[in-house]
Image (tube, rainbow, N blue to C red; front, side):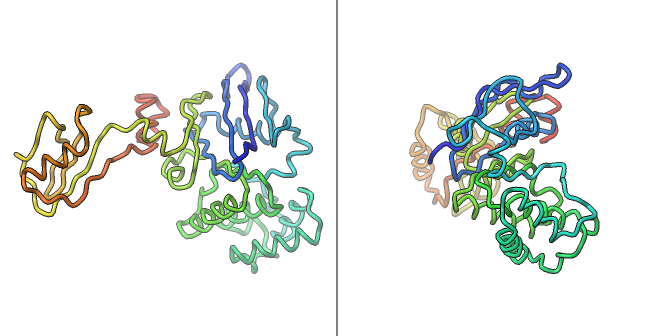
Length: 309
C-alpha cells in the first residue's frame, strides 16, 4: 500500500502550553489508523492540523506525496469532529446536500449520494426534520453521513461512536470497514482502547502531547506480552501438578490454570510436562495484554492512566 499521509515532527502550542510535541507518523492508503490517548492528550489538536484548521508551529504534513494545501486538499477529506458542527435549525436533507456541494459535488451527485446514505441508515423519513429534533444517537448518524457523503479519500473520525447504541455503533463500524476496503483511508481517534483493538490496523498512542507508541495492534501486543498462558484440561487439575522451574502458577480453578512461562523453556516443554502427568490437554493459549493494559503500564500512576482503570 502507498503512503497517503505523512506527518513529520509536528509541534503546536497555545499560550505557551505545548499541546503537540514533535509527533511523526505515516498512514498507508486503505488502512484504518487509530489515534489513541486520554482526553487532553493532544489528539484533537493533531487532527485539526491535519485538516488545516490549525497551522503547526513546526513540522510538515504531506498528503498524496505533496505538501498539504488546506484550500485544495480539504475537498478530498471528510472530518467528523468530536464537537459536532451541524446547523440545528436547518432541515436534515437540505443540510447534507449543502455540505456535500461545499465539498465540490454537483447538486445531482450530492442528491444521489445523500439518498443512498439515507436509505442505508434508514433515515428516509428524516429529510424534513431539523437537527434540534434529533436524539444524540440520530445526530451522530447524521454527522457521519455528512462526513462521508462526498466520497472523501481521507476520512477523519473523532470519537465516532459517542452516544450510539450497540446496533447503530455496529452499523457505522461496518461502514468504516467497507469504506476502507474500497480504498478510503480512515483516521479513527478515541480514548476507548477496546474499540481500536477491534477496528484498527495501525495505531499511535499519545500522552501529554507526545507519541509514546507506534505500530500495528498485533505488533504492539506482542512487544508487551508477558508470556502468560491459559491452559484447560479435560479433567480437573490438582494443585500439585505444578512445576516451578517451568512456570509460575498464577491461577488454578477447576480444569483451567493460568501460568507465566519461564523463558528458559519452550512451550512444548510445558505441554510435555502435563502429558507426562497423564493429563489430557484441551487448549493452550497465550494471553496477550490489551491496549488498555499496555497504556496503564506505560504511564502507571499518572492521572491519565487512572482514566482507564
